[in-house]
Length: 258
Image 1 (cartoon, rainbow, N blue to C red):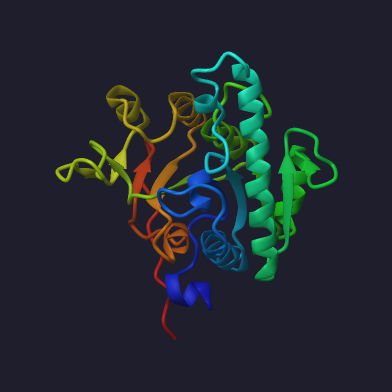
Image 2 (image 1 turned 120 degrees about the vertical axis):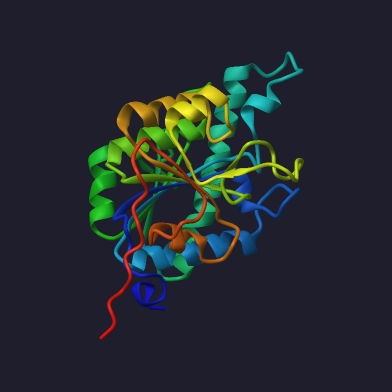
C-alpha cells in the first residue's frame, strides 16, 4: 500500500504511540489475542514504511494491573504489585515485536528494568539511533519506578525522544463529556486545551501525564485505534479523535495530482 496515495503525506515525522494493555486483547477479555496484536502490527508497519519514526509505549493491564492487584490484600505490597505490572508490559512488548517483525518491520524492544536476554536497556541516544535507522522501538516497563502509570511514562518518553505528538489509542473515538459507553448523550470534543482537561477532570490520561505534556507543549491525540486504518489517518492529519493542546491541530495535506 502506498501510504501517501491513500492517506496523503504524514503531518508528523516522529510519533509516540501509547497502547494500553487492553489493546492486546478482545473487549471484555484478558491475555493476548493474536488477531488484535496482528492488527496493530499491520497498521504500525504501514506507518513506519511511510518514513515516520515510531515509538510505542505498551501497558500491561490485560495481564496484570499492579494498582488494582495491590488492593484488598496484606500479602503482596503495593510497590511489589507495581513491579509485577511492569513485567507484564514486557510480555506485551515481546508479542508486538514478533508481530511487527512477522510483517517485515525492523524493531527494538527497550526496557527500563534490565532484561538483557530479551530486550535492550532504554538509553535515550540508543533509542534515537534506532529511530533514525527506521526501526520501530517498543518501550516497556514504564518509567521503571512504582506508583507511576504508563501514561506518565509515555509523556516522559515523548519529550525525551522529541516526539511531535503523543497518540493515545483508546476504544472510543476521542474524549467525551461523560463515558459514551454508559451515557448516550455524552458529547465528543474535537479540541481541548490542557487547562480544560485538568479543570474538568476529563479522563484523557492521568493528571501527572497531562501536566507533563502541558509543561513540555507536547500535543495529545486521543483516538479509536480499533477502527482499521485510524493510526494511519491520525498521522496523516485527518480530523479524527480529540486534539489536546493549546496549539491548533496540523491539517491534512492533499497529495497533488499529476
